[in-house]
Image: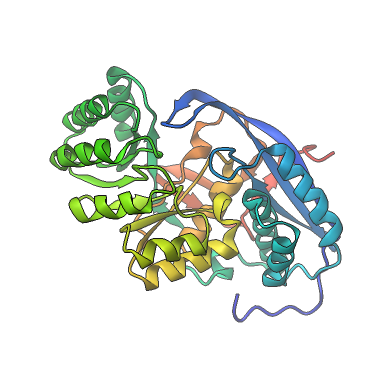
Length: 366
């Protein structure tokens, strides 16, 4: 946030939270989980009449958190971070790391709320704070693990809605996965980019077989084909296949990135605010990844439009990102926040407000 002038201190007065359930329009099945709803934790930081909005979306499989652990962390943060200058984001992140070595989504909730708060105080949006550019970007939309007919139906619908990138969840049945992708490619032709995400579902041998056949479908990448800890299988797959290999669950910190880079294990990484600990750490990881010639995509868990808006602002601040995997807000029935962004013709477009441009539903914190 270079060049940001602050005439006075804006101490943290309160960090509050509210747990809510996000209900999905349709069940989402992936290789290691099934979703019909998810608990998220909204975060509010107050300072001198200003309010910053954040979100912590825990995932037991990925971040090893639930809403109980997030709630405990926010309560501790409210006590320990009170009176710190809200503009001292680096210092606040260091203090959060002293409070806990883990709790990444809880830290993300606080970090996101701080950027929103600073943007509102400074009358700038978060992209500007991060010295980024742009206000719209194509996003991918996700097809879960489902039967052939439904997959093709969803693919046809998404193409009609203007989406140019479709992510297909795989990882439970390699033969069935290949058949679904073949049918989707046949239905859509070559006008839509297809990518696949196995969510750790394949063995090395299954992933090798998948990649040996998937070249016929012009896949953009295969994401996290094997277990998160199996770096050497990722490296082997990268060396054997012309289809780029992306790490997701394997990279949750800058240390993970360095381990992957040291053995040249992947071509790309998926940066998610909830597993990285917020915007501050995500930017550090993205910058280092690009310096090591590793591609970056900004993705999401099951967060609301708070986390999605924050991810979009982050994506405008990382060079060479062609599209973002930020579609979770489209899957929810209920809404607790308004503004921030809209989705039109396969693109997320951020609003013109300060910070993240969001407002909580009236009465959410009353």
